[in-house]
Amino acid sequence: MSENTKTVTIDFGDGRVAKMPVLEPVLGQSVIDMRTLGSGYGMWSYDPAFLSTAACESKITFIDGDKGQLFYRGYPIEQLAEQSTHLEGAYLLLHGELPNKAQKEAFEKSIKYHTMINDQLVSVFKGFRRDAHPMAMLTGIVGALAAFYPDAFDFKSPEHREISIHRLIAKMPTIVAMCYRYTNGLPFMYPQNSLDYASNFLYMMFATPCEEYVANPVISKAFDRILLLHADHEQNASTSTVRIAGSSGTHPFSAVAAGVACLWGPSHGGANEAVLKMLAEIGDESKVESYVAGVKDKKYRLMGFGHRVYKNMDPRAKIMRTTCYEVLEALGKHNDPLFKLSMKLEKVALSDPYFIEKKLYPNVDFYSGIILRAIGIPNELFTAVFALARTVGWLAQWQEMIGEADLKISRPRQLYTGYSLRDYVKLDSRK
Ligand code: ACO
Image 1 (cartoon, rainbow, N blue to C red):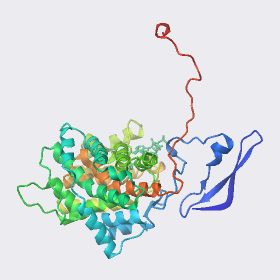
Image 2: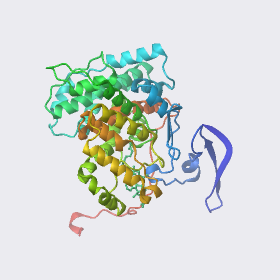
Image 3: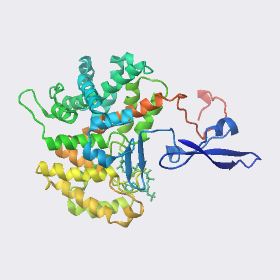
Image 4: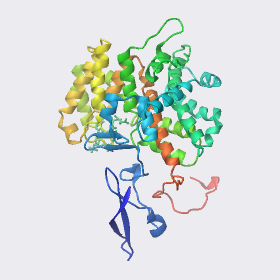
C-alpha cells in the first residue's frame, strides 16, 4: 500500500471540510482512508455487508471480479492448478513464496507428522447424534481442539504459531473424514502418512480395516485441485469472521471454528450442497426451462450462480469445469443423468438475458458439487470439504492479521434506529 497525494474531500455542510487520503493498492481499487472520520469528525461511515469497505490491508490473495482473475501471492490460480499442489499452495499462502525443495519437504513432513488427533476427541464425537450435520460436528470439534492445545494461545511466539498452523492443516482431513465415518457408523481410519494429502483423506473416507484401499490417482489429483482452488479467497465472509474473532486475541482454533460456522451458510460454503439439492429438485432435463422461469420470477435463486465479487466467469469455475469432465470420464460417469441435467442448466442460464444482464455466471460451487458427488462424497459433507481446504486461507489471513504492528480488536459501529431513551414499565402496567 502506498499513500499518494490524492485526497477525497468531504464537506459536512456545517463549515467543516475533511480531506481524506487515498491509499493506492498494488492491484485493485483505490481506498479512501476513513480512519479519522470518527475520532476527528464525530461521524461514521455506513456500509452494511461491507459492500464498499476494505476492512484490512493484505498481501495474500487478489481477486479482480470483472476480469475473472484470482492470484495467490501474485501467482494466477490457473498456473497453480496446473502445476502445483494444495500443500505447496498452502506454503505459498502462509509464507509468501513458493518453497524450495528442502522447505517443501520439511513442510510436508511436518503436516504428515501432525495428522492424528488426540484420542479423547473420539469421546467428543460420541456425544453427537449420529444424524448431526457434519458442519455442526466440525464447528464443535475444531472448537474443542483449542482445549487440547492451550499452548497455542501463546501465538506471539513464532514456534507456537507455526505448530498451531501445521496442526490444524494436518488434522482437518482426519476430522472431516471422522464426521463422515461417525454419521455412517463406520470405524474411524487412522491417517496413513505414506500417502499424499488428498489420497490420505480419500483413504480415511473410503477405506475399511478389512481390505486394501488404493485411491484412483485421477481422483486424488482432482481432489487436491479442489482443495487448492478453495484454499483462499481474500476477505470473504468466513475469512472476515476468522479475522474478527482472532482480533480479540482468542485461541487460533476458536477463531477458525467461528470461520467454519460462518462457512456453513447456503450463501457461502453451503452453496455446493444447495446445488445438488436444486438439481435433485429439478429432477429431469425437460424441467430446466420451467425451473429457470421460476428463478426469473424471483421465486428462488439458481444455486451455484452469481458471486459477490466475480461479475465474470469465476476462474476457479473454469478449471473445475474441466476437472469435472476428467473425473466423470475416469469414473465412467459422463452419462450420469444429474451431470447431463447440470450441463443443460448451465447452457440455458448462460444464454438467457436475465443472467447475462445481471452478470450471473456459474461459480466454483456449481461444478465442485458434481465432482464431489461423483467421487462418492455425500452432499452433507461438501461444505466440510470446503472448510478443510479453506483452513489454509483462514490461517494465512489470521497469521497476517496478528502480525500487524498496531493490531486492534475489530469493533464495527452502527446506525441506531431503535427507541430513544424511555422509562422502564412495570409488569402490571404493560399492555
Ligand atoms: N439466481 C438468480 N438471481 C440471482 C442470483 C442467483 N443465483 N444471484 C444474484 N441474483 C440476482 C438478484 O436477485 C439480484 O437481482 P435484482 O438486481 O433484480 O434485485 C441481482 O442478481 C444481484 O443480487 P445480489 O444478491 O445483490 O448479489 P450479491 O453479490 O449480494 O450476491 C450471492 C452474491 C450471494 C453469491 C448470490 O449470487 C447468490 O445468492 N448466489 C447463489 C448462492 C451461491 O451460489 N453462493 C456461492 C457463492 S461462491 C462461494 O461462496 C464460494
